[in-house]
Image (cartoon, rainbow, N blue to C red; front, side, top):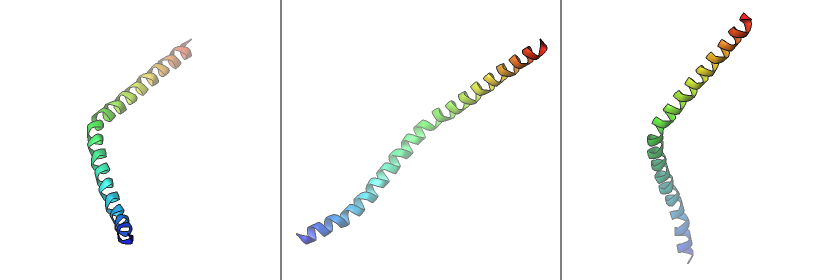
Length: 66
């Protein structure tokens, strides 16, 4: 009985390592699939920021001309 419990505890460490490897591989696959969309999102956010900044500058110029 004691040997079974000790063996179970020893196998838990192996199980954790295997589970960690499986999760890492799954996360790598998911990240490889998501990267293009993340890149496009960053480009979209930067473009939106620049457009809003340009509108703000045009409004400031218009108000200063009055």
